[in-house]
Image (cartoon, rainbow, N blue to C red; front, side, top):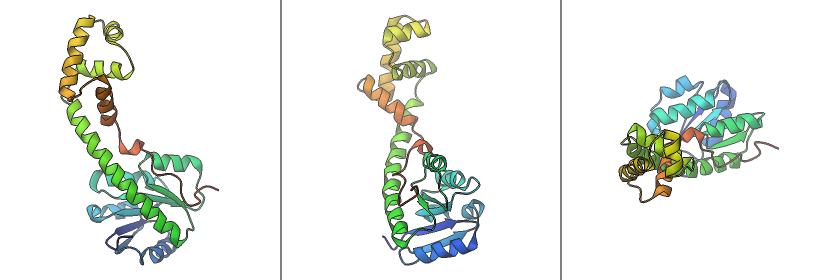
Length: 214
């Protein structure tokens, strides 16, 4: 575990914050306890690497939103009684891992290691997403329509019928679309479209770890 890691804890229960800080202090450079996400937002979010968040009252979603807006940290969720729908919701929001409280020292270390890998992966995905979105912004409304139909698996003739255009007109728009997307073929255009619509909160983290569910 890199000693330079900076971690925050978001938990309304002071005793639990203190216990988690006790676990974290030997393996990270700095621990910042917070009572709420509002307190978290007052910190220098760009300096944080990981944030442990108790899954209470929408804190997971709010913390992941803060990570997207102002920071680049990974969220590690925890709860005393994890349930499947909350774990799935947390992962969809962008959470890197979900632990069951109380957890042991090795669970925290493994959670941070998994979150570190997840953070690297998501950083790469964000870069690809932004590049794809910039290319898609160059498309005209008609070219976007055709791209949507292409992603649905429609041929030029099928797209022409859907849009009330001639196949020749669709082919022209399709060629322009490929040029603007810097795509060599339709398959690459579909990949770029998918990457451009890939939002981090829809991605699933490395999985439910360390006894989150029995």
